[in-house]
Length: 218
Image 1: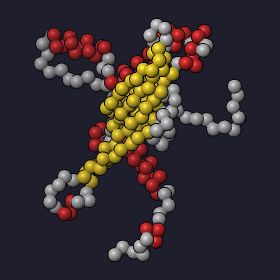
Image 2: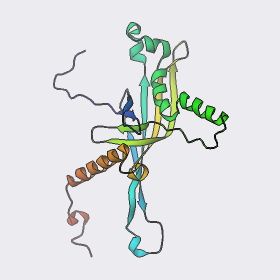
Image 3: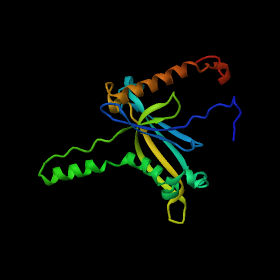
Image 4: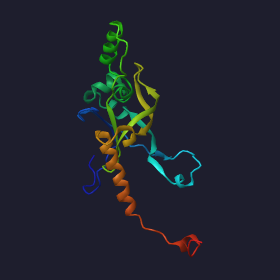
C-alpha cells in the first residue's frame, strides 16, 4: 500500500534507557501505537505552612509531574505473514512485553552478585542501579522518568497461549533537578524540558482584562 507523497510522517512515542553514569543508550523501546490519551498532573512544591506570610508564594523547586498512558501491543498483523515474523509466531507479543517489564527489574547478574556478597558476609549491600528511562514524546518532550506503576492486561492468545494482544498501563514520575542534580545527564535533560516550556509559554498570546469582565484590578 502506498501513501500520498506529501502526507506527514507520524512520529512514535517511546522510552530510551540510558546508562546513568555514561549516558550510553542501552535500549530503545518504540510504542507500537501512540496512545489516544496522555494524562499529566503537576503538584506544586511550595514552602510548608509556617505562618510566615512572606513565604506564601515561594516555590521550593519544580513541581512533581506524573504521566499516565495506556499503550496497545498487537501481533495480529504480523501473524498474517508468518514466514516474515517467526518471532511473533513463536512467542506472540511476549518479547515486546518483556522489554517494557525489564525497566522495573534489576538484571539477573545484579541479583546473583548481591546474593554472592550476602553469602560472603558483607554487612552492607547497596541497592542495585537501574538504567535511567527517558520518556520521549516528540523532540520537545524528552524527560527522565521513574516508572511508578506498571500493569498489563493480556486480551487475546494464540493456540500455544502466547499473548497476541495486550494493553500496558504505565505510570511515570518525571525526575527533575531536585531528584538528579544539575550535573547529571538526566538533570540537564530536565532543564532543557523546562526551558522548552518557558519558550512555548512566551509564544502564548496574552489576554485582556475586558475578556474577564473587568477594567482593572480593584
